[in-house]
Amino acid sequence: MSPLSGKNILLGVTGGIAAYKSAEVVRLLSAANASVRVVMTRSAKSFVGPLTFQALTGYPVYSDLLDVDEEAAMGHIQLARWADCLAVAPATADFIAKMRAGLADDLLSTLCLAAEVPILIAPAMNRAMWSNPATLENIRVLAERGIHQLGPATGLQACGENGYGRMIEADAIYQAIQSLLSRKGSLQGLSVLVSAGPTREPIDPVRYISNRSSGKMGYELARAASEAGARVSLVSGPVSLPKPNLDAIVEVQTAAEMYSAVMERARTSDIYIGAAAVADYAPIDADIQKIKKNDPSLMLSLERTPDILASVAAMNPGPFTVGFAAETESLENNAKKKLESKNLDMIVANQVGGREGGFESDQNALTVLWKDGQVRFELAPKKQLAHKLVELIAERLQYSRNPRNE
Image 1 (cartoon, helix red, strand yellow):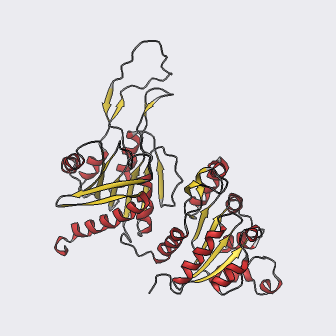
Image 2 (cartoon, one colour):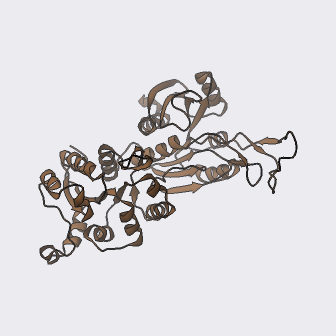
Image 3 (cartoon, helix red, strand yellow):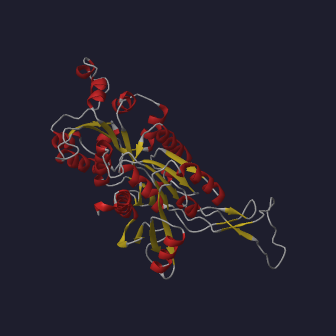
């Protein structure tokens, strides 16, 4: 039986070109034996006709807040109480702003205020609209209120431009709804701490030492762990990525700040995934003023930064500790050395510096090693790899607690 069988799902459709994808979301949910009702804004009808959704669900589409027949029975309250979940896909920049302000001037926005069930939004808009500070601030506030954000994705947009703002695909929305309503994943009830992104070690107020890490793998792992039922805290270096909807996100800049944030939370975590690309060295004394280009050469004195992975792995008791190794040569040998020297439970190695995968890419190939075994994940989207890796971590954690079960 499908986890969505018998579940009641409200799907809100707002006025964007991505509304055509919403029909596929409805089809997938209905195929999983969920009961679906669709609520459309006035502008959404300019992109997809209500008859499409009526044919897919078998029920009329709701759109008018002041419908005489519905209001006689407090229709919007009944709808809100009927639902197990409310998903808005697509969610335009305008509707996201309306949700943040708490407006209720149409049926869908009123339902978002009246609903006492999980709410998910799948943003869809032009890349410039998505990156506008007003939109990012609206998204941040909604995340703090517990609204689940799905995407957006990056790629070619209807306007012909390229970048973040595309609504994620229907299957991903379906999977997120299913995960949210089942909440019985492989990490159910566990606490997971993830570190992601680079660190920046200041040279002066203008310059810093850093690396090419985008944080994409770590962010996808945090999302995958959450979807597997875990309580997830993310310690993030400076990245340019949409914030996932997690239990806690701590933003840091330097290796020392990341060390403090991780150590503060590691002892109360069941799993630590160290996906961050932490700087190994930092300037001993950062200048308080910008260094002028006067001398033909410049010498920087560096010192080792705190070893976060080794410190967490040395805790007793401590979390199941997963490290990452970004290598340009001798991938497996270097990863095995790091696994042993830092006393890790598992290490994830990836080749960087090549034409495919690695830093800044949306794809990667991984070799995962532990004391008595290893597995290879071929080149694939990082989102897909994250789910595979989370399942493997759950399996190895279970084995570490019950070794006779293998």
